[in-house]
Structures are given as structure tokens and as C-alpha cells.
Length: 419
Image (cartoon, rainbow, N blue to C red):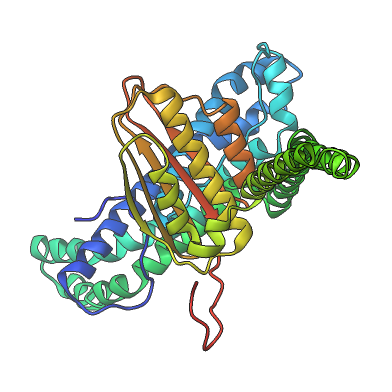
């Protein structure tokens, strides 16, 4: 049997079978609960209407101290119902009242648009919302009530009403899912954030991730410059000096010139290795050669720990997302080796519904801190792509890091084979 708050799968008419019957009975029970909640909503609405004008006299402050939290609690129940039936959370987003006194909190509440949305919801819940929620259980119970009346007092009136009520189960079967969904959508529209607020939060999030991405890119550029300056550039300069000295000595001391040229050749090889190391830090060649699954496999082979891989990921992923995912997994495995004291690790992943989801775990001691520099860097890297990172690492382990990022696949052109 599905959970009471499982998402509504469809509002279209369905064949009469056990699954559809159980689904409609579940929704009717939910609807009856929503209807019964109109009683506390009516009481709270009346008290709110009384509290607002009596605020200057002090009575409203006392009422608000109890009414506003009770309204928030009732609204949270409806948010949970709506979130469960729609399959997505309905956030509250109240203004912070931490540190405010008995007089300070009501002043914040008065300026909080989401608190006023709760008041509007109380009015809706006692009128249109109550009617929408009352219809499914009333339609189901109407024939039962009229049948009971007919058995208690046989007569034409009860017989006629019972006969007319026999159409109610059919109507109940057809309208219950759309009625419950309509009530749920209305609850979300009132109790959830407004479109303007959502856009404001989205803009703020984009601005923050953009700033973090720019800072990370600037730091990466400085790292590359430092690596080139301290590594390849210094070695190439040494090659130039050795070749210059060899030119001066080639006539007078050929053996010394040959030794200098040998050193220059060895230094050139070292400079090439430094350059390859820098390139690997920008975009590992193994990603271009073998894709993300092959790159993660090569990464797992390089660490001194048995790693189990279960990757169902296509090779045709966008290069920026692929690179970000690779370095995120690399950082997680590096943390496992450094801090987890683990005996094994695992990496699983799948690409589904235009999202790439990777899970990196280990059986170590746990206690990983998402705010640490390594994991925080992973979160910043994924946030630039609207991705997210969640960490579960209780004391004693295991540690499980879940990485998710939007990732549309890149279609392979006809006639081309994946590399």
C-alpha cells in the first residue's frame, strides 16, 4: 500500500481496479484531514483579525505570541501535505526572529510577507479550501447516509434521495484526484514563495555561485602561473643557459660542451613532465581518451586502497561537467586516503533525467566536515553548474558523499564512434 503522502500519480480517469481504488481512498482520507483542519484555521483567523487592531493596546501582542506560532505550525502541516502529494518540498522562508524579545518578534512578523501569506491561507482554508476538501468524502459517504436513512425510516423521500445518490460514487471516482490536486496546488501557491521571491533567490544564488566560480578560476590561474614559473619556466631557462655555455665551450672543451648538452636534454625532459603535470591539472587527457568512467577507473587504480566501481555513465558528457565531476571524485578519494583510515572505498554513478549523480563512500572512521577546504571546494566547483553536494559522515562511519549536477548528454554525430 502506498504511503499516505505519496505523490499523486495521475488525475485522469482510471479503470476500476484495486490499485485505483486504494489510491482514491487514500486521497479521500487526505482530503478529509485537510477539511478537518479548517476548524483550527477558522479559530486562528478570528484571533488574528482580533490581534491586529488591538496591537497598540497591548492585547494584540499577547495574542500574537500564541497565534502566530500556532498558525506557522498549522501551515507547516499543510506544507508537508502539499509537498508529499506533489513530490516536491514547499519551503516556508520566514524572516529570522532569533534574539528578538516579546515586543521585537511581533514587529518582525508585521513586516514579514510570508506571515501575511499564512493569514491569507487561513482565510482560504476556511472557505474555498474547505469546500474542495469536503467534496471527496461527502461524495463517498452520501449514498451510505441516505441508505441508513432509508433503513431507519422507509419512505419515498429517502428512497428517492438514495436513488439519486447512487451517482455519487461515479462522480467520486472521477473527481477525487483532480480535486485533491487542485487543493494541493492552491496550498503550494499560497504557502510557498511567490514567483518574485523565487526569482530574487535564484538571482542571488546565481550571483553567489558566479562570484565563487570567478574566485576559483582566478585562484586556478594563479596556481598554473606559479607552477609554470617554478617548474617548466625555470627548467627551460636552465636549458637556455646550458646551451649558451655549450656554444662557448664546443671549440675549446668539447667534452664539457657535450656534458652541458646532456644536462640540457635531461632538463628538457623534466620541463615536459612539468608541462604535462600542469595540463593534467587543467583537464586530464584520460578524460578525453576514455571518458568519465575510464578516468575514474584510472583514478581508482592509482590510490593505495581497494575501490569498487559501479558507473553507468555515458561517455558523451559535456566536457566542463565531466571535468568538474572528475576532480570532485578525485578530491573525495584523496580525502578518503588522507583522513578516513578506511579499508575500502566505492564509487557509483548514473545519468538519469538529465542529471549526473555520483556517490563516493568509504568504510572509514567518519566525521568528514563539509565545511573543510577540500569538500567546500568540491561544493563550489559543482555549484557553478547548479550542482549540489551532500555529505553523510557520522562518527564511526561510513562516509558517503553524494554529488549531483545537471548534465544533458551530448549527442554523438552520425558515423562517429565514441573515443
